[in-house]
Structure formats: structure tokens, C-alpha cells
Length: 149
Image (tube, rainbow, N blue to C red; front, side, top):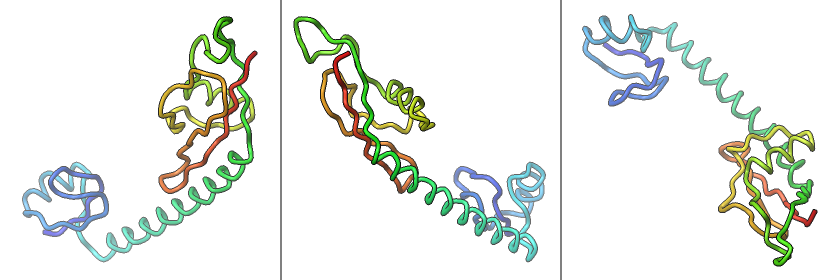
């Protein structure tokens, strides 16, 4: 029996893939648990519509990410921090992705800390380029100025 998978199943396939399985496995496990639907012309048509909808949704999210990338790359973020008295450029703590996310929130950008890519935490004054992964195909470079408070 051929079925269309509704969910990813280990050793069987990914969502939307047509697979051939034994009749009993399909009737007793996959279909009753909502993991698959039988291969019919109506279900195949529904699968094609779902693929088109997902493609359009991905294109829209990519366009939105491109617009956000332009806005972020034109932004220069300044973070005033406390420094050691004897060492002028050393920070008391370090600048993390969470700090950058909070500073971006103040600038009215809602960027999650998990998409901000820092190779290592910032521990001294200076100008840094920080990558932000907005979409699987789109990432922006943000200029961060770390200055003495």
C-alpha cells in the first residue's frame, strides 16, 4: 500500500513523501495514528496545495528577512559599559548575545538572542561585527560599538 506521510518517521521518510509500506502497517498503525494518509488523487492534490502554500510562505519570510537585514545593516549599535580603572579597555563583565538582543529591543528590533552569532563574548572596548541569522538563507552583519560608560 502506498501512503503519504503526515509526519517525519525514522527509517521511513519525511513529511509529504509517498512511501510503499505493508498493508497491515498502514491500516493498523500509520493511518489510525494520523502519521499517514492513503495515496488517493484527492490526498495527492491536497499534498501539492500544501507544498505550494509552504513555498509561498518561505518566500514571504525570506523577503521579510531581507527587509530586516537592510534595516539592521544600516544600524550602528552603541553599548556603554563599565571598564577596569587600571586597564582602560577591559570590561568588568562581557557582552553576550543576550545583551545585544536587549539593546536591539530598545531600538525597536525584536531579535531573539539565539539567532545572534558571537564567536566569543566581547570582553574589551572596540568595534565589532556581529552576525545575525534571520533566515536559513539570510544573515545580517550588525556593527556594535562597545564604549566606556
